[in-house]
Image (cartoon, rainbow, N blue to C red; front, side):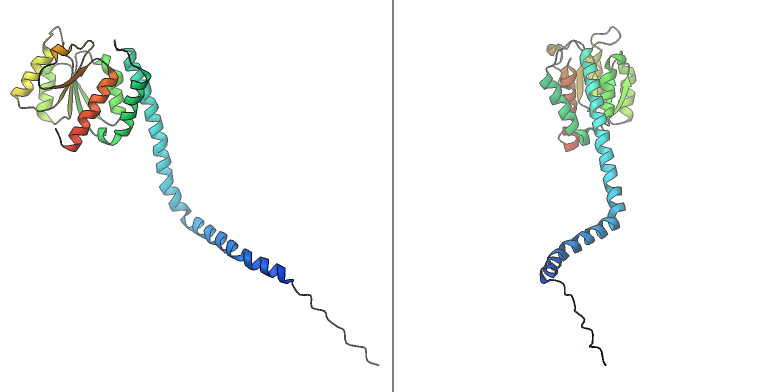
Length: 222
């Protein structure tokens, strides 16, 4: 007697599940594609982003140092400054970073220690700042190499006309470099010489004048 053949029931996958899988498939493919791209380009992304992030951190450190140096210079100055004027000067330093970088300054003063915070401030901005204690030291330097700006005081070594005498020598040697007068007590009536771009006793104003002159130098309008 033969046994009846076993009946095999094929259990099919419900149509709803197939539809769900079909709908989900593109998203899965996109995730897989993104993963492949990421792991393929990961090294390149890291190499490009790390220097930028480092630069941002370095810029933050430089700006913080600039604030400290400007505040220190202001403490040693007889002038007063408003918070708005301080922020404006720091903002100009930040936005003029490319213009200031590589600029050459000769600072003539017989007491350079009083200018140390500002000297360091401009150097932090990427400028080259050389110091001279007298006109006798300054003129050979000016004849030997180009400078973008001269910063000078008026009184040196007991001579109240030292700054003016230096201006006359600059003209005699045909040295055409804009001059900023920075002194403890600036008297505008003494700063009428046509070779003086500006004069001040305020650190924040000196920052503005330096940026102004570097903008003109870079744009070739001096």
